[in-house]
Image (cartoon, rainbow, N blue to C red; front, top):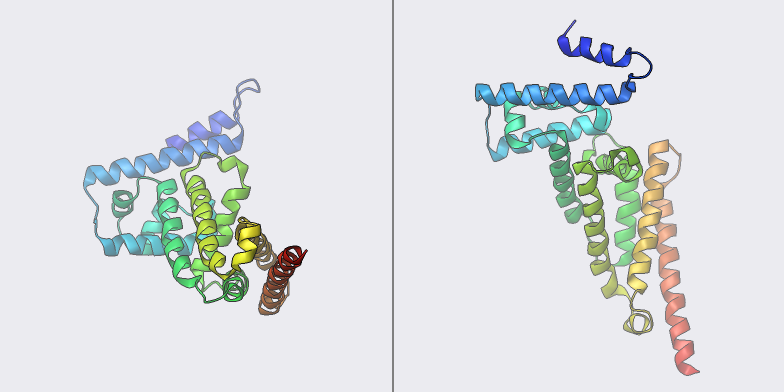
Length: 252
């Protein structure tokens, strides 16, 4: 039995007044193991710092994250899957939180490339049918990752976690980016009457997309393309109704 394992057992089975919750002990031991790996790897100088290796590490982390979740992704497993020494992983990323923070940025860059379109209908269709619907396909790792990332927002026990904080920042950036793409499609007279109207449409679109991510994760048997069309039609109807309202008020 390792020394760390013995310490963990002692902490869990200590007298009632001093016992620590098993989850706390597990977290402490995990951190200790990671720090030991990091120290040994850097002491031995077993690192390779290149852009190619960084990308290989991120791709390996993405695969593990999608299949094993945040808790199941470890620095040693990332090293094994990437085919690189664990020292290379620690050379690029100090710990798992930093690794996931960079992974979120990595996936965000792909998201920005994918979420384009000449109309609001195209954007919402891409978000629901492409992103949420595509997240059920294990081959579509960048989309599947956003399901895991969404859990960062829901999991309060990760409050203060660097990866969670980065996801919340990226979520705000996503929102503002979508506003900048949606707003030009809103008629000027509507924006004059309600300058925040585009933001309201993005809030609605994001709520729909988040909901469909949950539906996909739950295995709901629905046609995502059909509901993408229904959702975009509903948003367009809201815009048309607002145009009519502004026009009617102008006539009065």
